[in-house]
Length: 110
Ligand code: FES
Picture 1 (cartoon, helix red, strand yellow):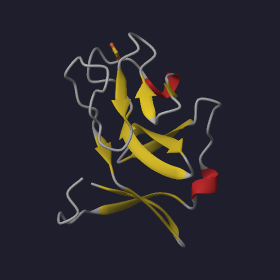
Picture 2 (cartoon, rainbow, N blue to C red; picture 1 turned 90 degrees about the vertical axis):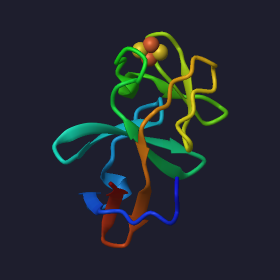
Picture 3 (spheres, rainbow, N blue to C red; picture 1 turned 45 degrees about the vertical axis):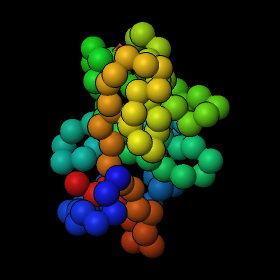
């Protein structure tokens, strides 16, 4: 993500501990009334789209693999959790947002 860009930070939870992660290391959250996914990999949080850019598979039903890729449950395309790049070679890119875990809450940059 471009660190020079200024974001509008939206508080999505009082703290990261409010998120409910499944065994797939993905939690559901809301951003401006729409579902988004929060993934956890190596104690870091990443926000990404609820639906896969390929054919709208629900990524909350996918999982984070050992390399930190989001794996879509429909066709198993893989996306790097921090860059959004499709690492399985199909040419798609996953939308994602920066996350900040601050003392007063969990924020997503839009
Ligand atoms: S819908 Fe996600 S890989 Fe096809």
